[in-house]
Length: 171
Ligand SMILES: [Fe+2]
Ligand SMILES: [Fe+2]
Image (cartoon, rainbow, N blue to C red; front, side):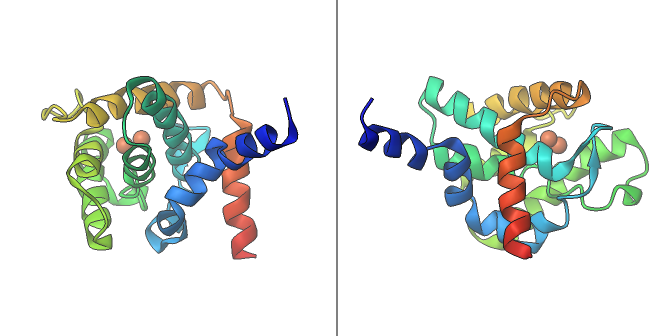
């Protein structure tokens, strides 16, 4: 493979896509406050959100979904979990955090109907309302797959790289 092809591959890596498409979200105070929040016992909400974005980019390639919606809906979907102590239990957490996440995302003034569906209904079938879009349905799968692999501590170096880039920016 020639050098120019290598450059294209590096430029279009999923790490860079997530950082480019989600730049404003990764820089927002809503996202910064979830980076260190514990999640799925061995993970954090920040790690999990970027992890879901990687899996949704994978699904976007297979099912020809919008990469922008895949990344942005994923990065927003759990920003409502910024204070675990404010939930009264796991049932309340499951039902309340998508509502909080959607409120935060809507305040940004950047989300569309597809991203709103991804955020609001990603906990289905734990929550009653079914997603109404393909992206909303795919994130219900990505969210659960990522949660299981995080619980099994199968950590992904590419997720760590995005989080390190965010941390380096703050320093
Ligand atoms: Fe969630
Ligand atoms: Fe999640």
